[in-house]
Length: 483
Image 1 (spheres, helix red, strand yellow):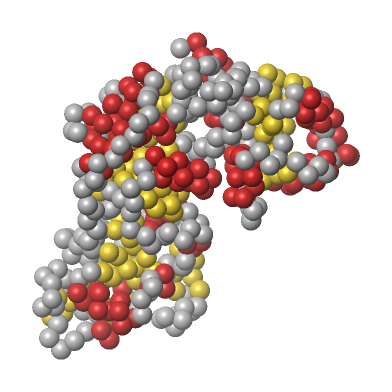
Image 2 (cartoon, helix red, strand yellow; image 1 turned 120 degrees about the horizontal axis):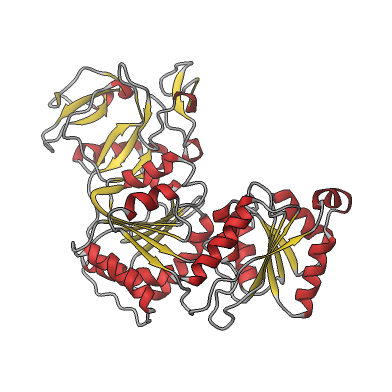
């Protein structure tokens, strides 16, 4: 798209328009050229959603009118400046290997650059603009109320966040809380304070399942608060709300918007492995945003950075006061050879049989989705199923298991964290597999004993040889319980 910077009589700040939008009384501020190559003025600010043109529910004429009125602003999708690497302005990618070229219907070029990093959210190219909002919506003052009670440890973490929001404590805090500590409830006083200050709030998490679990819990706690859930396939992606519960991927669609950012499960995949997601969360925040990280297993770098200045609060007990279940190790020999022959494991079958006798429901973690599907299929019971990240019925299956419609659920690490099922026992089949890191195993063990009515649970790691991750996870849990 060939564009130019102009200034019009409608608003003072220069803005980009396609050259065929320029009117007779507009004052040109630059020569025309591909939008990716135009230099930006120093004072070029926008706030809110940043979307592709085809994501908007407006005609080209309506977009043109909103740009000229200052409600929207066109910004570079990819910045290509002389002497610099190309940069995707949506996801922050500047790795040349994560860009590619193809024939483009906009510019008719056979080698139009596009970003591969965030292509799943729609193609950002060298010649097409992103459409950015320039103003944030205002929300009416309201007083939120929550009638629940926190434990002394929960209150300590909650008070730290409230003090931060009041300017008494540092704007950045790590809440290091054991699995089942009640992190969601700890947030409630901070949410109440943030709403009182009319701040726009983001709870970001790497996993869709966590978003789907948090939405009804927060809507139930605060029925008058405008809440939007953002994840792949959400029908609320363009809703205005004061509280957004979002996957970290969806924060790529925001810029300079959120006053309070809560990153739940900050150590989880893919957030901990993909630097563009951290960039997206940071880009979506205002410069003065308060940022709270929540984790039971934070990475060493974050813990060291915030621990050196006293910006960590530890919650070492579950909300009901009982310790975390300590995993037991069960050697099952060469389970892969047995699985290849029989498509099952006699050890797992025996364990399930014992749980049936005790009328216990179970969550069984396996190394990959194929194994989850085949184990459930081979056993062939109507009360046993599987779930994984690629399952189109994933949301429904998790809800059905939560309602007790299934007795046993085979799963990948997709359910290692952020989901709560009352009264279940947990097994890891093939616990020595590389997919089961120390953090993953700690989180998996934390799925058991989460209900105050049933605060204990059985956790077993079936294996063909102990790994450092297994031993480290068990040690970490024992240390937490001794604290």
